[in-house]
Image (cartoon, rainbow, N blue to C red):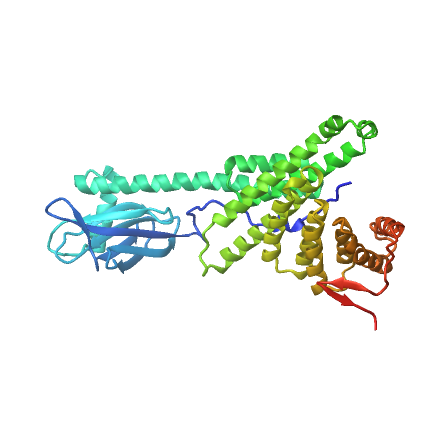
Length: 440
């Protein structure tokens, strides 16, 4: 029977939401740039231009200057306000841009022509803004109207994109939460349905792909166990009808194969992310997503290799090694090391498996699972000179494992076979990493 490995930590993965430009605490950024129109029709940035911003819905005034590239920004203006931007600069004619909104992600452009360098008064600015609003901009020059309309179009585009992204984010949050809740309730069909809906909105969501892999894997485990315990399977097994057995297990195989594909895509997406090293929160989120994806990938590949395709054992071992290298929790790292070595043993790669179990015992000399794994791996090599050491390790496992350990009976059976071959354990004598250990 397949064992289930629940990784409940997956529910803590933060969905990597689409970037939106939205109000934070009801404040938004207002940015723009100032250019001067040249005689040949080209434009050039205007540094040190005076920027006067006024709220037109209620009183409010904000001032700054452009930088050397002609850019300006106000970091936290009230999101709900409506503004007018007035710009003046030496040897330039002043200009205004009415009907401006903050927090929409627009980069407003104000064009200046040559002039006397004067600066509009607040009364002139407010009067011009009111006139533009009441006449639909008829008092503006054609150039001013063109700039205002272009800025308004950019604002609408950003607002539409933000609205669309917000709708997607709502879908992602809802389906991620509902899907993981369904996993916890063992309702894997519903979980997969939820994750599929979220991935239809954004196919590149690594957290959803990882969670979908978990749901597919768990459903595959259920389907495998149900098929293997069915009367049809037992009949096919007793008659040696391998085709019928494979057919009964196909739904489980398909689920676990799809689980591998989903999480491999998640791993690739997370690895391709670029995260600023100075952004600690983003880095932590990235590392958490990668660790969860690597862990889920290794487990899905383990099940597929063991029960359906042993030719994938080496790739599965490599996946476990990658996860082990990323894991920082000692207990989780040890579990993964044991699982990786077991993958090699399941694939009858006894010599390689033995080396891995020896590494584990070198760092954890009292680990009884590694003792049994090493003993069985040495036995699996089929090399008679390894049988004595195999018997020693298996005996040590039997001596130290509690009677409730489900592997104790099979260990006794392996040891009985070795005894039938005139190989008897030498109690207290085991070899780990090439060194024989004796009791004093």
